[in-house]
Amino acid sequence: MRRRAAGGLVALACLLSAVLGGLGLFAALLPDGQTAQLRTDAIVVLTGGNGRVARAAELLKAHKAQLLLISGVHADVPAEDIRQQYDIPGPLFACCVTLGRTAEDTIGNANETLAWVRQNKVRSLRLVTSDVHMPRAMLEFRAAMPRVEIVSDPVRSTRRPLIVVSEYTKYLLRLAIVTVTPGRAP
Image (cartoon, rainbow, N blue to C red; front, side):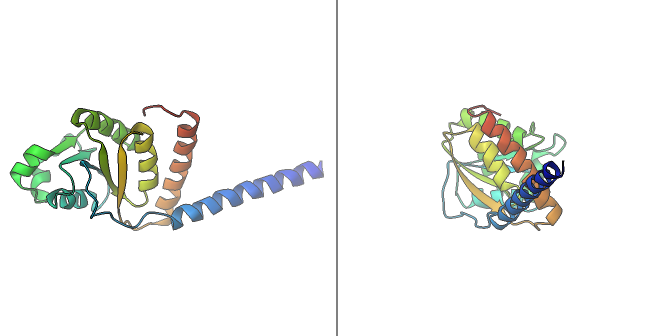
């Protein structure tokens, strides 16, 4: 009986060590470099964090892509408010910016983007989201669009410990699901 309990404790300690070691590695390897010099067909920005839409608008105005999808825009937010807030010239906004209003989470962002990518025949995409969110976002986007070249362009966040732990946990859960169900569209 004691051996079984000791074996269980050892297994639990090993599992806990692996999870904590993985968390440390996850936090240490969060992306921090932006890829402004690279040009892609399009940019997609996931709403929900400071600096994200501003970064995407800056990239569009610098001609780093021809199209911009702002994914996860609330239905009550007028397009003109977004255009003015990020100082996007009217003609550029009219021709090249799409407001995605259906996504409510990262999987929804990937679904919304997949439909938009197909409609616009996009082959390369710059993904703008926070650095802490980027690993999970890249996982979802690559699973949804394996034939699209996706470049990460992370926006630096505060990296609060609770947010890092939350994102790591979500990443592990989604990684397990994506691994078990390969080749699926989200």
